[in-house]
Amino acid sequence: MDNRVGGFWNWMFTLSKVPELGDTIFIVLRKQPLIFLHWYHHVTVLLYAWYSYPDYIATARWFICMNYLVHSAMYTYYALKALKFRVPRWIAMGITSAQLAQMIMGTAVNIWAYQVKQAGNECHVSYENINLSLLMYTSYFVLFARFFRRAYMKKAAKTENKGMKKTDSAASLDFDKRKGTKLE
Image 1 (cartoon, rainbow, N blue to C red):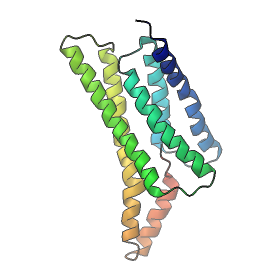
Image 2: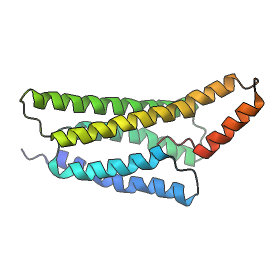
Image 3: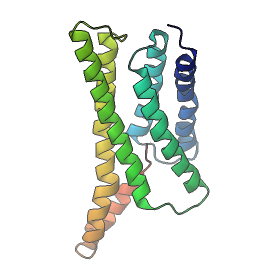
């Protein structure tokens, strides 16, 4: 079946991964800390999108819709921050939580596609693609969960323990400045 609308959005998604690398380039040029999660995520999504595009995989619509949804919120947040708006912390936490939910959903979609194929039904995605995507989504989940813990949970604990040990909290603050706390 010819699906020009789906094909168009699939192509737009694949192309959108190139300018997303611009975000990484700006961080490097501004000499800001570049965390592993950020560059790893952008590079691997770019490679996976370009790898998967020619096959027009069945799982692509799920991945594309989830990614567009989360990225629209995330880049709106970045735009507001760049315009010097004070954005409440809970919004950043919500975006990172949405990213974690995206990784769980991406994993679930891959497991579902695998089960459909195992049952002998047609599912236009290769086992190799499912495995690559599962590896990618699982690694993203681990890295985003680690980021969430460092960026939001440790800061909350520091605020609660502020009066306890000044030397410990000062060292922790320096650590956080070096690591950076970018959403993605």
